[in-house]
Length: 471
Image (cartoon, rainbow, N blue to C red):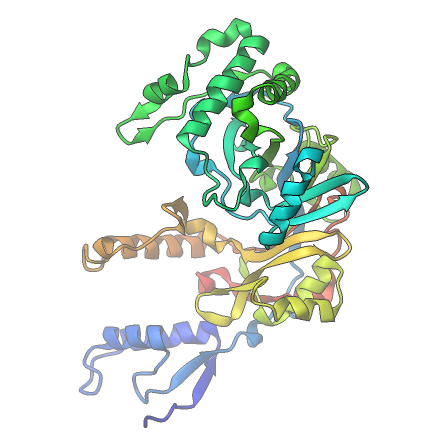
């Protein structure tokens, strides 16, 4: 049996220097191909001379007390709401033929409760017995059902200000037999022809000529060689309230649309952190940022509202990488929970996931699904680094640039690999790596969440590298 050689601890900087030395060394009888030996060292950590294994020591590069304190900024990133009434305060681009790819199918880590009417209580409570994901609360004579929105059949209704969207959710379609939350063509056709277009005819008669005459005609109009183009029509801001009211009345009065009754709206304001940055300790700036992110929706609408509150830690000319050893302390500081509560989270693989950086297990961010945790009732928390933004390219279910077998075999070296190397080289010259922490909490906690972060936790949470070394 082969013995495992003793590991030699090295910092990342020393490891890179060793790689360069092996790569640039002269060929010898024992090492006729230095470049190949250097590549083997980079991939396995085994030295060409004695086959010893190098182990990356990250503790030596901990931020600690001897480095300048990182600059910290706070922001509001995304706002999510689930309401009975449409809360949008903006013109809506409505899609008669919506993109089914924008159906909500992934968890947003919140639950939404709606009251169940009397004639459905018996059915709902019977479903609860057989459905483990179902939760309900009896309050007086009212039964409230709690939904994980991504488990409820839904459809994109429209968008506003390009990046933001509003969806319709149909809880009556959530049955034991249904296997998909995507609406069928028949359901989409019924919804448009029996409810949405008649509502537009009543509320927006002056612009009805711009609306497709039927669902099939919008399908024909939008069809392209590669699918559908999903054209839109405008519902003006001033008409949204009456449109919503008339739509519900029309659905309630149409027997064929019994499945659409008790629908609710889901609103997403996404990816606006750069527009709402503010000083972590400045209450006035926090209030202005809060007003800015909520200006497009009526947050007084009864429902469920959550917001993503973020902190960014930056040190000029450096990469600040989250330390795996600090996850428990980060949870305690961010959520205001005890060490025992934080230990319970990090020891539960069903709710806590590490995101390891560059295959070094002592460097990692994390994600954790929470159950109204801490003083702010958080539903989700994540810590990650900004370096992934340089290769962010969401498509086909993947979120970053992907090396396919075809690209790997094209060229020597493959052009994809050379382009990636160039990207990292340019980033090393120009792009710092920041540490980011995000907490999804109820909107009522937005102005209090992540308004302070202990100095000792900051210095223990980050491993600090010069940016050229990290890239």
